[in-house]
Length: 279
Image 1: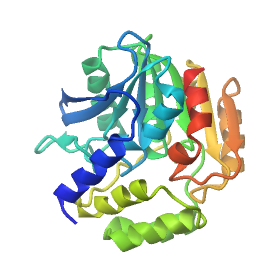
Image 2: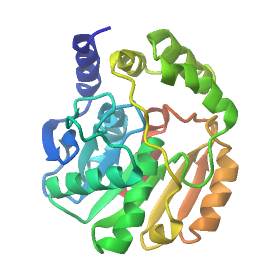
Image 3: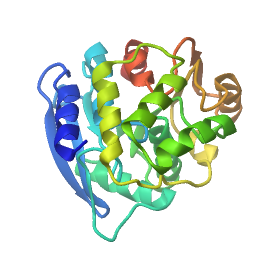
């Protein structure tokens, strides 16, 4: 494994996106963030945050399914995660507040707002924290929030999932990543190009994911919110999480999509996700 082979796998996934893709590096206090953009230049902006380690390229299937027809899509490589974003020396992202500050600067670099902000898994946790802060601080910053199988937002992680993921997180190897994804997906057939890119992330320095409290749901109630849970998710009980989401956000649209697992959700449910993003 090497950064060269990672870049080849990254470019392979990005090359599957329909139409021209513009790669932009946006400076923030926490480093330079890579954003892959496509869709009509004058269309309403849609900002997509991937799950941990997934990179912005995971959104290509959603773009192909129509997410960029009505929006200018901006798919983000999370700063500090595998991808083409470059963290600032001595300015690591360590707290939810740091993540909110990073995303706020990123949105400024993209032209401000209002934007539709969508995230998957860890990206959904970041999006929810940003929305909770933005609702209280900067009215009009966000137009809509879409959370795709959000983790640590409405319920916690299953202990069995954490134990299974721990070896991969502590000392990632291609074999451990491949084994974990096969277990989490229930042995479903996964896109080999995506699996290859996930395996290539093992070469990146181990970065401790930011942890912290759940976002305050009171802030989220100021926005239209759409929440979609993966029916076969192993990270949490999706039906319990959906009940908690409905209780916390009674005006939100909350659904459980049967037959799909957590990590590959943006790939395996691209059509359904694109429909929701375009709403």
